[in-house]
Image (cartoon, rainbow, N blue to C red; front, side, top):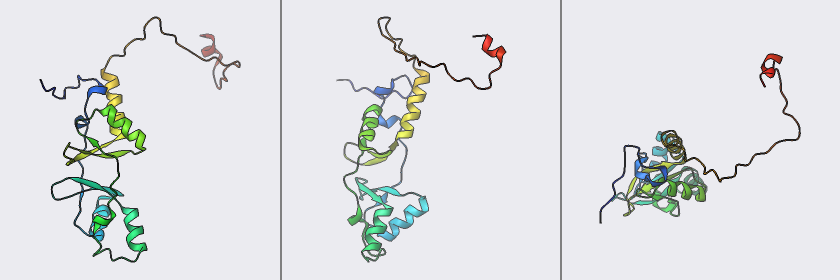
Length: 178
């Protein structure tokens, strides 16, 4: 069986392109550091959440700055000694690098998230994908791919209001052209 390679020239249609084609690099947090170290790193990068990986690079979940602040500070734990591992949110959405962009988009819409980590089939973190990158790709593809005309038998609907539209500051010369 022949393996189909990704088309990076832009010729593949949107639905067939894979997440790997528009992946963004990402930084992650190692699971063995303290809450204080994780919060400092997130503060330095000006982010509110981050993927967490183990020593192999396997995605374990996500850390939320707000959740750590509530759970650690609110419960009186010492952030310098509290391990970050206890605060990893494990049931987060992610997608595989070989999924289609359309599949990733649908998954993100269903999960109501704007960005997800991207992993290999072995769950090794390779980057992120966000809904804005997907929208940009869709717009870019729309400019490159010709539109498929509707068949002549297709019905096109329209709506006409009963009242004429309100025209403001139009000169009589412009209106005569109609």
